[in-house]
Length: 502
Image (cartoon, rainbow, N blue to C red; front, top):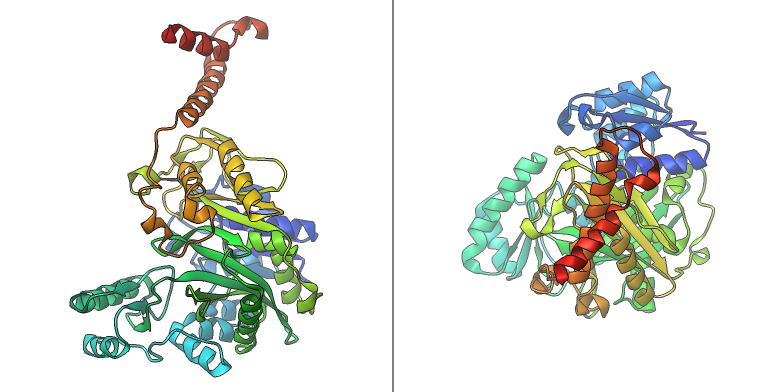
């Protein structure tokens, strides 16, 4: 059985994996770049190894250094988290070669589902509905133009070798075809080293719905229901919830069966996600499979009551799933938002810097997966996500209210964050009513602009005043005095405001 796990990642996901390991009595090993020497995952782990300079290409993507750290620490398994090497079949194979357990699927499953065209072919053979489009990679303009005219506009051009919105272009007009194909191929080449693209018919009112699956090494596969991920900005998810507000029980059952069939088609073991595009009539089509743990996995954990990281470890240990499909139920409603160190009022520019103060939200039904702390400097080299905020309640209406309350209580100073923007999303009527698709942010751009709000301004002023009060008292160079002689800057601030109003 696995006794020591090296987590080949950083940030909140590294800490999250380590928490489950600690509950299971498994020791953990952190790896870190020069920029992450003081990061929370380094502090939390039982052991830690430096693996190189700040750029991920010289540290977190260096398979040789990670394997060397695993051997030096005595780790018998590696958990890749998400991103970095989590969907790298070569890394999975290297772990196997070195006698280290890779906590994830087989290299075959990663390869098959990682290449979008191969995945489409596999799904067609398994009887899973796919969006009409090409089943062979296209690497020249002439063929791309011919195929697009055959399928009919609008179409989506997508990179065959990757995802995350890179190498993706929507084409609605014939005069845009050449530029869009060229741009998609160029971006795909830069991001994935492969300029091959494929083309799909574009669903005009798409909903992005994904199903969580778990498979063991004995051929058993179950799904843990759906997540609604349609609130997206530039193809990146911003808010996720489960259950989906548009889903019916009949369609849920059919999509769940399709997700299980998709996983079985590649003999999948571990945690994975089958992503679907769903139209307004609830027709669904396979989009892709993520052969790893998803960022938004906590909402599934909260609603279904299953720790997905523990399940990954149990599966890697060769244990069969401890439950069957009929044992799983959805209970209540969960919502997750992603907190980024960025300025949403300045074109979402990254906002690296030192966190001066942080107050994490607490209370019934609130979960906070983060890694930042007061005095921590958010590095500029990586994704600017600070944390994930997850809430659960009996109903969707109550979950929205709880998330708004949690965001209200979440205070971070020193860097700009997406917290105000997320709060505005929750107040848009289309979101409240559950009638939104992947165009939500674009269609509600006016409602998502910052608004003058006296209450919010006063709260911000109060938070800043309290922080200044705290720092001032810390930095005062004077003879010691009794606490009561310092007075209260809060009271002074209130009195000054009263005088100014007169």
